Length: 543
Image (cartoon, rainbow, N blue to C red):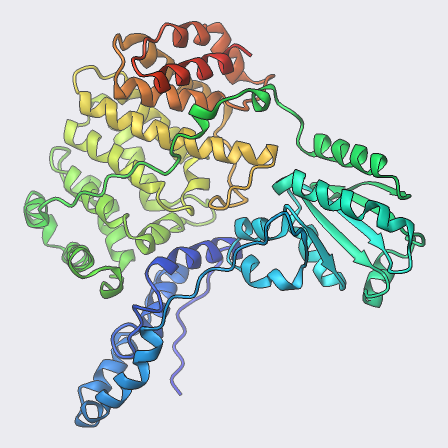
């Protein structure tokens, strides 16, 4: 047996699982082919992400090499016949969580639904009561509740009073939704391990509550009113109420929060020709071939190229290419980022122990340093590239934290103030929408929101960056005279930035000093939906 050591990864498990989740769109049951699209292709992509190195070509090509032999050709019809029932079988439907009307379910029964990601696990275990029998199940559920609330109900089959709170407990679980995980333990069925962990629980019913991983309260007694009161106190302590949450904002919150991306592929030969001799580098030919194959035949037919070499080319391009044609190198990355595997690689391409995506950081900082002296094509392409970064959940924690966040805000605000190039302003507003949307979704986790596509490590933008972004948006809203798509985008981004913001923070101070409510209130929208959107954002800024 040949053993090839590829290296060692230091990526956290959460990041690895998120990347594997993204590959589901490429590696489907229908796309499997024993000779062309098999486990070797998957292993190659996975290894490239983990250590920046694919598996050797003589391994990835082995099935095809066998097929090309006379013996392989003889066996091909039989193998195809064996594989056909697998590749043509209907795609299994994902397991859906049970409706709240039937709230009780065992924790073990949901392991499959929970395994894909933290977000899907929360969907499977919240809004219902989880009956558990082992301490491992308890620990798993409490781990899921580390950023929200949890409550354990200790009962037993022989406890008559316990029955008085069964239905109220179920009702509270349905009402709390994703804010709290409800656990029920029947001592007559539970393992001894639970008794060992909770030796002081000697009476039933007993309740123990947790807030963000810390024990909050413990009490005994079958009083439904006390149970409801204590659960409400638990939720308020875990998710302090915010006045915005009680306001009606359906028009704002129903706006699509999918990232705005720029996926159009330019004529690649002409694009590469602009780079002259620099464009003849093997890394360029390789990535162009990858993009063409992916566009023509789909992602499954396009194995990953040597991405470290492409990254090295991109970093060198800022010194090897003049500013007037540098946009061509940036545009290659913009297009390549539409593939989740490429985006995942560049998101976790850390330089040393900084945790910052090295190539993307280098490219953004270069354009930021050029500022307004950067040629128009380079500025526009950089904005489009930056928008495409948001298509990968792995990028979001980096994009909302320094140094990438400060570079993005700087590039964005400079373009928002550019009245000479309308396309720059529109693209900058697209980037503002992506930043504000991601920031809003992460902020909502504080109030019990279940955001399945963001990593738990993601934090909001820094106060200084949020205020700089909001100030630019308000200036855009004040300077645009007539209602337009630009004004609508700026309004939505303003609403997302303001919604749920810290009432003691710098952001609120800014919108009050700048009379943001007055600025928004002057906007004259034509359609009814748009007028309602204006009113909702204005009310948020009046708080």
